[in-house]
Amino acid sequence: EVQLVESGGGLVQPGGSLRLSCAVSGFSFSRYAMSWVRQAPGKGLEWVSLSSGSGGSPYYPDSVKGRFTISRDNSKNTLHLQMNSLRVEDTAVYYCAREFIGFDYWGQGTLVTVSS
Amino acid sequence: DIVMTQSPESLAVSLGERATVNCKSSQSVLNSSNNKNYLAWYQQKPGQPVKLLIYWASIRESGVPDRFSGSGSGTDFTLTISSLQAEDVAVYYCQQYYSTPYTFGQGTKLEIK
Image (cartoon, rainbow over all chains, first blue to last red; front, side):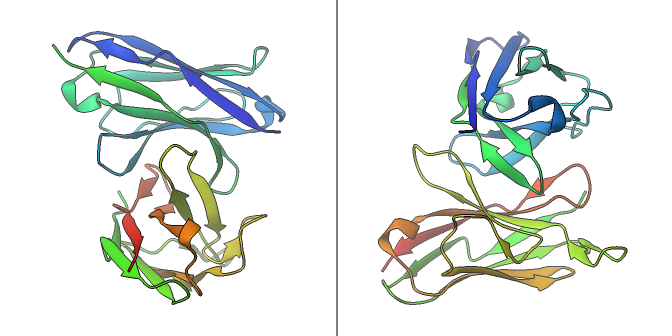
């Protein structure tokens, strides 16, 4: 059974940092690209980063480029998102998702709240 | 960036009736080299992981009931639920995976009339 479990969310002040993790099981992690997708309270879905199976050539939208870094540890089946210089508008539930054709598996998400 | 626009924003349909959600992309998501539309549909219910329903614009994901269907090509797409069931109450999103940044529609909230 495929499982994706996010962790690491919490309350952080503007300008602060947070590192999210996504532990995966049930499939060969290194063979798949993975993404982070976020959802602000009451809003829609926004893609925020993509990692290839090897971890090379990450992609980011302009909204987080230079502040967020996606990485992965294929030996531990874990995906990470390092978030720096956090802003109030980064407040959201952050989901990790497996990319195959579209995003075929999603986690339950972890809530990040940026507030003073 | 490719902008995805869904309509309507909300929809109320009677049980057993047809529900239709539209999605328009600001540029074509059809790859002429393989004739595939890089368009997916998702369902989001409270407390549950987001679920992939349709990919390549019209291919149903394994396990998705056949009352769900996708159609369209280029820039205009439709998700149809042929006979609405109570468990279909959810928010539905389209998404293009033709190019980064991947983008989603704003969502359509489907309710029972």
